[in-house]
Length: 397
Image 1 (tube, rainbow, N blue to C red):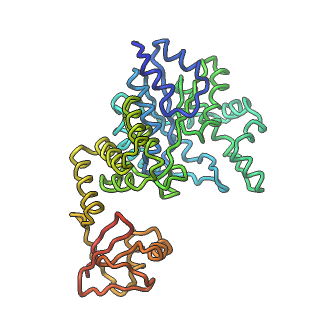
Image 2: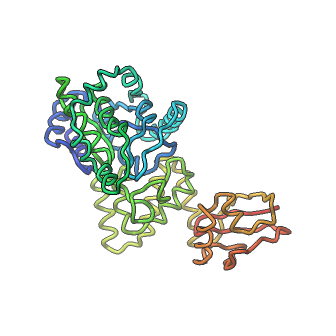
């Protein structure tokens, strides 16, 4: 297989957090051998976001270099539940839930990877066939002390919270996955490092070469503080509409502009350098955010959508106009207060959030700020509702 040294440099350095062991992986990549690149997912939800795509884009780099991407769906392990960093044990999923979630994941991943060249496997195919004596032999490769080194287990012990025996088994099974598919490299989030390391001694025991491990950088969410995640409500979902993506990107703090260009676009080193120079020279960050938003919307949708959203943004914010495609919601119960209507139609996360928005002047009816929590609409007329800077709807009876 032809070796592309520039691409190898990108694989080893662009948006990489840690590599175990970097010199070992570099040697594998320079050898010209086609490598098995493992990425395991327990499909516990349906939506991926831009933070997930940092890792998927790294898989694409390996794919472009000619290596075999193996997308491993944990239809066995998802029914057990990976230990969480929270106080409670993760709830296991049913087989049907896992399979449905996996379908939606593939639809999103194929926006980045050439899915026709990806090998999709399901770990129930081998884990479901293990006999009890084989599981015991698998467990014999590790000590309780080794498993207790995991940070989340330490937190549970410190707080006198229970650890299920099945939770100890999860890392062993993930490690065995790498043996089953003969993984040369495994990619994952930083929170998966412990699990991915479990594969190396198991592969050594099986007289196989030990897999290299790579984690990618963490993308900070739109709040500019925490890791992008659904639980933090600071994420940009792949299934978000072009309008939602554009608006959310425009809302990120200026301090994240460079990170988002590096981690969410395909700008090369020369282009990234120009972006940094433009900021340093004092260019208005809004111009760079518009470029960033258009680049991301074009990638996940198309150029026409990107241009349309730029025009819409300029109309609403620069010219203080209104969007051209405001959705109209027909209200059945016209006696409900505005706060209840917003919560009922999921325009806010909760009534408490609606109250906070009202306190900050963030909810308008017919372009007038609302100050009363108990405000109700007069449904003799159609009303224009604005929530925050980006959400516009019309309510009518």
